[in-house]
Every structure is written in C-alpha cells, then in structure tokens.
Length: 383
Ligand SMILES: Cc1ncc(COP(=O)(O)O)c(C=O)c1O
Image: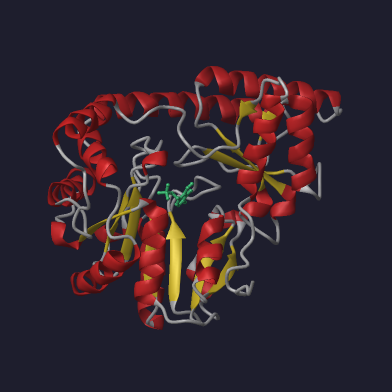
C-alpha cells in the first residue's frame, strides 16, 4: 500500500515504557509506575453517578458539535470562579480531550507548511500532530535559567505563524507568570502569530495560581481538559476557548472531524465540575507526593531539577549518569522495578540526558518508588 510522509510520526516513548512495564508485570514482577501522566484515581463519584442515571434515561446520541450547552456554560463559569474572567459560553467548544482540541486548533489556524514554535522540552504530541497535519514544528531550546519555559529572546529571530505554550508544563511542571506569558503574547502580536495556551494542568498547582491566557487577551486559543485535575483521562473530553469570530469556523471543523465529543463523557464532565471536595482530596495527595519527591529524589542522587509549580512531574537532568536516557530508564525498570520516562519523548536534542518522574499515583507508591530508586542508585555507587 502507499504511505504518506506526513503520517510517519515518531512513537510516544512513554507508551513503549508502559508496555515494557506491563510485560514485566505479566511476568510476575511488581512495578511502581512513575512513568504515567495520569491520576490513579477514578472520575469523581458524582460524575459516575450522573452518567449511570443518564444511561437509564436517554439514548446518549450525538450532541451538537460544540458540546452540551449546560456544559459550555459551566465551563465559562469556571473562568469566573478560578480567574475572575467573564467568559461568554459561546466561545467554549467541548472537544474529544485536549488532543482533539489540538487537531481543531491547528486546522483552524494554520495552512500546510506553516511553522508553529513549541518549547523543548515539551509535550511530544504537539510536534507529531503538527507533522501529521503537514505543519512544521519549530523547537525552541528553552534555558534552565528560564525554568525551561520559552522567553521572547528565544523567539525574536525566528519566523513562525504560531506559538504553543503549556503552563504548568509537561514534563517540567514549571509555569509562566503573568509577565512572562504577557511578553510572549506581545511578541506573537508583533509577529502576527497565533498564540495557543495549553492549560491542561490548571487546578494542579502548588505555590501560586496558574495564569490563563484569557486574563491577558481574547486573541488566543486556550486548550484545557477533564483529564488531569478532574481525573478523567480515559473519558476523552476537554475544551477549547477561541475568539468570537473563530467559533463558527471551529464548529464546522468539529462537525466534520468528530461530530461531537463523547456524549456520555460530557454528562459526567458536567457533574465532575461540582465535585470540589473530592478533587481537592486528590490535590492533597499530589501535594504530599510532591514534597516527598523534592526530598527523596536528591537522596537517590537525582538532584538537578527545578521544583515543579504545577502538574505532577519532576524533570531531572541525569547527565552525570548517562548519555542514553532510554537505556537508563530500561535499566531502572529492570533492576529497580520502577517505570520512568526517558526525556527523549520531550526533547529530541537534550532528552538523552533527562528523565521524567511522575508522582500522580498513591503516596504509598511514591514512597516505595523512592526507596527502590535510592537502593538502585546506592548499588550503582551514585549515592
Ligand atoms: C501538556 C499536555 N497536553 C495535553 C495532553 C493530552 O491530554 P488529553 O487527555 O486531554 O488529550 C497531555 C497528556 O498528558 C499533556 O501532558
């Protein structure tokens, strides 16, 4: 059969790590999962309850492409509650996860061959989705002194039609504050480039509140999801906020590409938004895990990292131990029984010397994982 060049994207390495961990488990080993970027908890109870009720009552057929109106209104309300931003629900588009939103955003904003700047390290699928859509990802090699977030000086000499940022970011957990995000938005305006903000980890923040791009401008695309704070990864539901005059265009794309986000998941998502106490209980676990990681990783010899502002990852420079993060991650899995993600997923240039540790699972798992890492690294003579 014929093959397209644009379809030849790289694998998502963390998925390969998950598969290797699964095989080890099948062979009878006990593995601590520090590779997965998802909560160990279920969707909030009231969300599951709302869906089971709805399943008894309705057919759960297609919804309108932009999403159930009550859900769009409730998402708009979240912007009032979280950021004091008055958002018109008409600008909210419910999507099949933030992944579906990326496809819609990139299709709505760019023509084939156009360039979109993304921070490295960064979430790998940005690059692969852009390539699959015949767009050109431009990696920005972010600096440790900027906590691995892009700054205008990284971008001024580059030509691009779009900039995608994430705050809190995956894999670093670092955030852009109001001034840092504002400077990037200003630069995009100067260059007539679209500004896209991935805010999927909002709600999972520790010292300071995350800033939404909507506090600074209406001329942007903001992408979010129920996957992380709302603990609903497999439900495949997220959302996007676009400028008023882009809604109809995105609606037409959504109608044709997806018809709608899963109806069942939209019902559950609406109920999840009122589950404050349960969601904050999850946050208490992340907070405790984060503190343990910040204290425990250096005891295992992993001390080169910036403490995360949000999300549930620590991104560690392991250049003093390896030049091959993939092989190192494999060794850690085989010998320590801990699954971790090699940095190559996030940064093709420098990621051979970094690892991402996720602390999204239970506190017991994190404690055990840290003990195993400390033992493994001590046996290697590293600590
Ligand atoms: C920064 C970032 N954006 C987007 C996604 C995709 O999430 P979703 O489940 O909403 O498609 C992830 C998943 O890990 C992520 O880390």
